[in-house]
Length: 422
View (cartoon, rainbow, N blue to C red):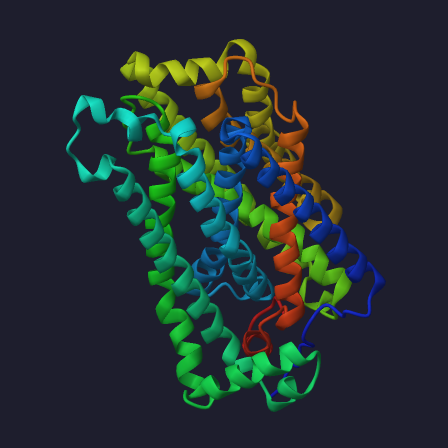
């Protein structure tokens, strides 16, 4: 039996690169948050609410896929994916404060600019589903359930890695954190904890699907009057799956450069992630066509009109850039085996995919409110976008510095199993 694998905790706070990046991202986040506060103090209508909503839709979707990535591949017993599990889970938890904070800001301060149907009381709708309280309660309940389960799922997978040494090293806050976690560990059998990670995986996927469906309905489909689509949530979720996988691959470079985990990210991991991205690209195209065909064939003005507005006129270039970034470029790139064997090519394609899904979210929201909007056409849009992304990355860096970046017990089990990937 091979020796137990030890994964150092944290990214190494002594590193000048880490320290500089941490403070730069924190400063950019504060600039973005300050811009939002100033705009709200001036006048709520001056906030670019549709653009802010598009960024919120993009980041909450791709970040929540992180824990789903771990759950899906654990259920599939995909041993090659084990180095990515902890990163995916931390990616989800990193957006937790923004998922609730920005949702509440949008609901209480921006809903009258975005959600026309909440102000339709004069028409006398009686359904609680179409009320402000209904919107607030169902989304809060879904997000609380999802993040509560995601946090518990992460802790269950983390506890087998903890040792007494963890509570004696590092900053004081980290030592105190690990002491509390060790108290939880002694109450459970290590073997039961490992089994529970696999048992909880289906629940994680179901709860995430419900939470994402509500986001897609309430902040996407229902922005369009009399628009009803059963494919819309699945199309939204598949975009999250695709861009979320690409983002995990992009963020894994942080681990490779900042921690002693390079040996776990080999050719097998790169090739398998490339294959997974290829499958997600094809599934995204299938759901895109399913959404498009039903809308086109129905030819109802309230359904086909928004799609026509994306494909023709002012937004036409954005639409074809989106389709190229999400489908044509990745598919052509992945047809060559060499693309899936090199870090630089996989990272480049992953960045293109993330950009394409961001444009897709932009086109879901913006054409409904503006006939000729151009992205990043104002300083407010730039600072809010950069600030939100920087805040997410700042929290992610903090989490990566607080916990082992790779699941040591799963890597150890992989080395003692008959697996050609290790």
